Length: 300
Image 1: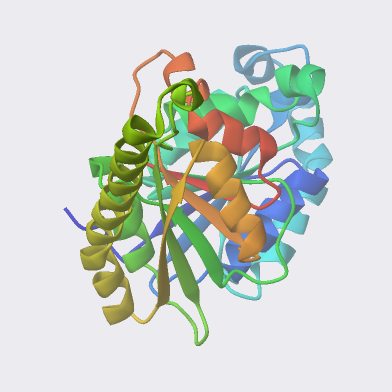
Image 2: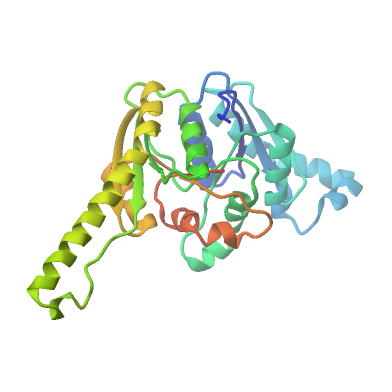
């Protein structure tokens, strides 16, 4: 089923630089004019209390309301150029729970949030909310480390899987501005010459080399053929499209494509999981979140 153009965009914010980058990226994204947006702030992230405690202590609750007014006002100002009537929700819940619960209430078609993970130890702390939301969200998630200057150039990892098709549908649900481009990248397993090839006589080496070369050519042709239909769909929707087949490690190949094409966003199809974050976080998606310098959109 195609993804609707009537996007409902939920942005998680806490006033931090990564959250500000998420707000900025949301405004720049080529959403259709029908898109609606909402921001959510989870205030109990800063307090050693829970929502029930706040409910029972009205005075503290009122004081806390004022404390978070600057973050809410900053979110409104950031979104105002595109969504002047955007609603800001302040939730009494831990960040992950607040974001996921609001995504369900709002019927969000995408969640956008910042990423604060830098280095293994800080990833365990600051990046845990982003990873957890990305793993458990019922909709696509856009994770932003730094806001790009523009959002016009995309790299989409495409392997023909159902999730890659969903990622393609997501792109087709957007309204590309003039000059917007997509590079479809199909990564195939590299084919190597046998390490012991030099030990064989030339009469044996030659046929092996020919077979390896033929296998490489087959994989490349199959990869190109796999992207013909998707490329046509994107071109029909107004995108400039280029298709590439790369051999090697999937993550390294995709990040290389992002750098070479100066992409603003990397899009990946992420398999849906249920309660086991390692199923997502041990995949290419984990590496992309940890290593990509540009925002990463995970579509399921």
